[in-house]
Length: 331
Image 1: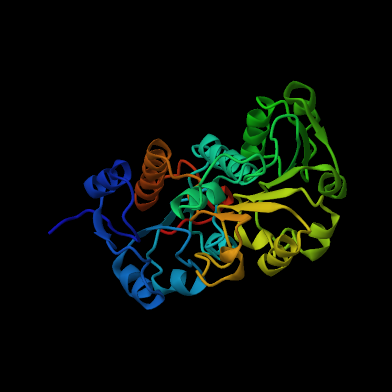
Image 2: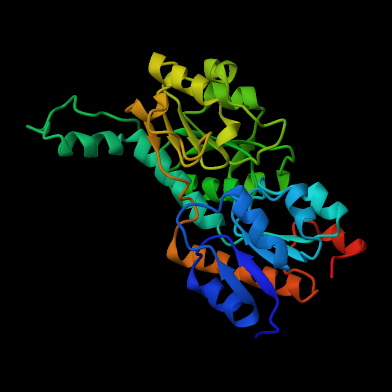
């Protein structure tokens, strides 16, 4: 028998986090590759006081009310689209996330997608593997220059700023748009604020770094693509539903825009028979923006520390809804 608080961890995470949870809690771990089905998740949390969840786990009012003894939900992610924060706050339930640690790693992958799409790296790999490479050719797989091109950044938070820093090394002109203009950073970072229509019209690359909310859902639709250059490339490492994927397919297929590099899709994972997957000018990777050994280890530790603090009735190190501490926290 153990007096440790019972918790449910919905997937295997790096050992940096699991070891902390294992030591402090009576941990039940879902060890399968796919997330626990809804009915399993509802059953598993019935005798638990804490849950360490992933973006693939829907944490809503039904789940919260399935066990009023839950003291904390710790999300292994910066985002929390999977959690009904309003419902949690109303119930005095603190929610944790893992901000800050993946800024540079995510900016790295966004710029990687930009470079790989611009220089047609995926197409070139396929070309070699298909034994099509017979000789050097002056017209073979020509891509777009990155240096001195114009980059438009939609969303100028930490990751958007990280993207701008990387662009500076390529002497790119950087335009940005955000709901909050950052005049304090414009001169020091060499960036220029612009409205979205200006960015769509002028940018050679448009990189999305905003969050998903009602105003950004399907922000990139047929009307947006019609305003972009025919040589423009779209990069999305934020959230899949910010882009209308069928509109993107039509824009890429018709030559309305030149290419796209996606780390996130809608739905996710994207079905292998989705039209976008068949396009050579659409590079898709499986949501790996934070997938470096160091970053995922830090995320695991942060998620574990949020979980442990929550089950002990202590303030979470990184709460999503800090206003919950103004009211009654579940104990």
